[in-house]
Amino acid sequence: MNTQRSTVSTNRQVSRLWLRSIISGQEAGVFVILVLMCVYLWRSTDTFTGPQNVSNVILAFSWIAIAAFGQSLVIIAGGIDLSTGSVMALSGLAAAYFISGDQSPWAVKTITETGREIMVVDSQYVPVALLAGCAMGAFIGLVNGLLVARGGLPPFIATLGMMSIARGVCYGWAKGWPFRGFNSDFREIGQGELELPFVDYNLPYPTIIMIIIVVVMTIFLSRTIWGYRIYALGGNEQAAQLSGINTRRVKLLAFTLSGLMAGIGGTLMTARLGVAMPTAAQGYELDAIAAVFIGGASVKGGKGTMIGTLIGAATMQVLRNGMNLRGVDAYWQPAAIGFVIIMAIVLDRARQDPRTGAFFKKLFRLARHPRIFLKSSEALR
Image (cartoon, rainbow, N blue to C red; front, top):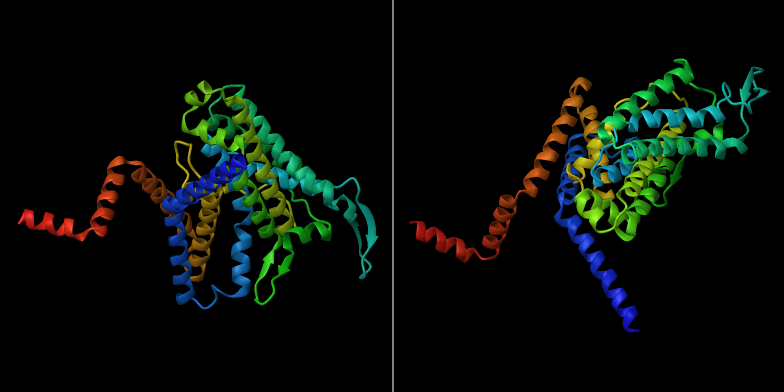
């Protein structure tokens, strides 16, 4: 009985510390900014809260957020993955190859109602296509992990090279042409929606998958030994080694999961678009990295949460959508995103500065005890 009580008490303390770290961290500040942006757009536009626009917003950042969840693991572990966008494109092509009427070895001829002859793939091969997309992402992530953990290459160099290799494979495989003619059940995974009761809004299937993944990844980071090891590796790699952690395995796991998440995101993106292009997801690695940093992860590693990454991805998409609704020239949108990234990192550095922490502690103390402030003012006079 005493052991069970102590275990329950320990779990409650860990949960409280985790919630307190989120509330007191950058995630809370970014969430407040997100809410203020939504309120401003709701008041200044007529279409922001419309069912179609809301569905488009939450759908558009779903696969970015999923890819960013894997990027979070790498950044928390003290690395970076620049191959995310190329992995998403290659994973989409891998999934499309098995389900495309133009490419699949299982495609058969059929006659449409209008009498046109087309090639289609039976629905029984949809799981194979989904597995192929995820497996391609995990494989490339594994190669990245081996280059970093076993080969000793810096993560920046290894993933930069893999970014070019994966994109080159996309162009060579597709010969510059998109894969089309997807099975309708495969497209339904990316384009289908779940009708919510009592409201006019529908929840896209990719968003449902994103919610499931963020819950699983949050539990993985905050409740498993491997999650603790990832934080320890990013906090101080030498100390992690001295404490008995196999840092090579941790790096390998982080990069493999990053590739897997990119594979899932790329497969969902392809199912949504209904076409797999070798040029797909260009620049998405920057969006994933930006979502992680905006969500409160540290550039030095050792800090970050999946909830923060989700908020960061949502913030970027709401910002893009808001600029479109307000009629801002599309050429200026990358500048706005870059400004947000720089400000997020500046705030993170300022938050880590001991002088900043001492200033806010003093400010809170004065707010709680105004008499101290009044006495100090009288003394100055």
